Image 1 (cartoon, one colour):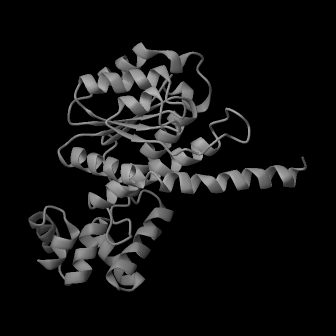
Image 2: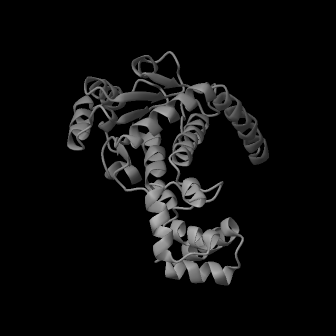
Image 3: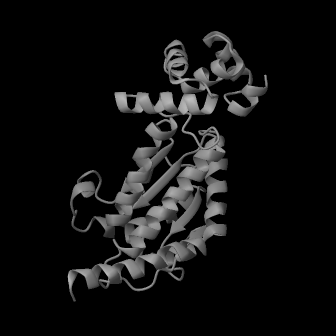
Length: 277
């Protein structure tokens, strides 16, 4: 096949992924609700995976704190083989059931947590062992797999299994299966963060502004959310100590930073309620 024929084939197969994920939406929504319940009660979202699945889960976890302003201990990703497995292969890591138990013990998994096992095959020993241990600790368990008849799917309380079909390169689950995992992980974390109040309309109101690019983005978000000019948004942002929530209440209510803080405290941080006070 020519290069064009190969990429055309891959493109045709990739178009099937979105439909496969769409068929899982009711189960994805149930998983989101479980995650939101857990975090509201002080629990955590814990991803567990190996290889590509583990790396995709880790990517999702590390991007959430700067995007939504949550603590780094709210969403955690465990990957078989640890940090070395992020950039390379750790031989035999995914086959170690005992390491999964060790890793979950280390972070003190408990009944208030949600543990999401991510494994395309649904047979990875590290991930299976993690969900079994999580169940023993009475944590909520969710499976994300490409095989709905797999041991992982049967083990979890909620099973999400986009059936993407055979890969273009047989067994290369970094392709369609990996794409479906990325899509589902995006949905799980994004929908949970929205329901937990970390957005205002469709804006990242809890964005962490730790460099010039993100500070400029925060200023544009504030201007769009408030209807104020960029100069007014920048001034409010400085007066608020670069806190988008405080700055937005200041601009909407034409109040000082201290009064905006008081309103947010009364509303327990809920932006919509603060706007009504």
